Length: 407
Image (cartoon, rainbow, N blue to C red):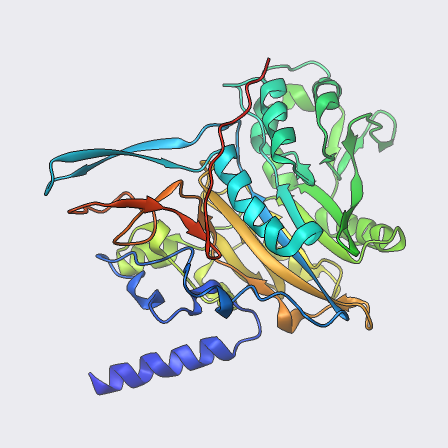
């Protein structure tokens, strides 16, 4: 028993000393990764001074990213019925949706102001809802940028697909990107009115440049009728080309959105016999991820240093909060219930991101309310004597506002 405690403490010391941080440094985090526990996994409302600390020196400028992926037209929260056998009570628990993302993002905005970036890495739309309706609520959310990805290419229109998509995006009040589509008939890049190749977005005193790519291997799964004379360019050369362009255009930070996901949860879930949502890991431990013949991993390995500062992926139902080939990579589960988040710190004297100050957080399940006992909204365990309390994030109460009605 003593040896086990010593070993655990040594691991904790190693973890806390690492330059890339996660909110999983909390002393009670070990309780999450066991079959019967799920304690304070996402918010630690009483420990906000331990992570996501705002830089005080003007030399260092923070940029905080809050991201969703694989929204797939999911606007409303997911509802779960939870039964308390001890009190013979039933509770309706709501998780996620646009209203929750806005509430959580607003708390980040209150703390970091204009330095916060809200993004969607791709798969915005679904055949089950209209493009126009989804855009209405994403405009309300106030995204800074979004990519296009797999579910977006599943929309029912087949002829001149990209041109039709471009026309439907005219009501978007945020830049929508698709960076590596090439028109074979013109031997040149497509020219669109509303779909952009790349963009530079203000973030407080800094500028963030965005790139959004569809991996050619993923594009092979798209309906070929929608891709007449469309070619998806190779990833690494396109990233290098656009990153250099964005830097010249004033981008201090380059963020990559890429439609080729990664699985970093299945391995631990299976070996430790725990639910996938309970899996946590040290950001530097990429061995927990399925790296075998993954196009995203191979691409990041090819890039020169400091070409990309942060990566947001989509397309796989898994959470990622890891360093992959030296790059912070973030992805959350599908279903519009989770938010990925991270903080980068930019040195205005050296004109570069300070990697040792980067904070990669575990994705947050966007609870509308908490179970008092566990201080989260994990619904897969049998709870007794349930008491519902307000959800908190960074020490502040989550205030869910009704969604506006689209006329």
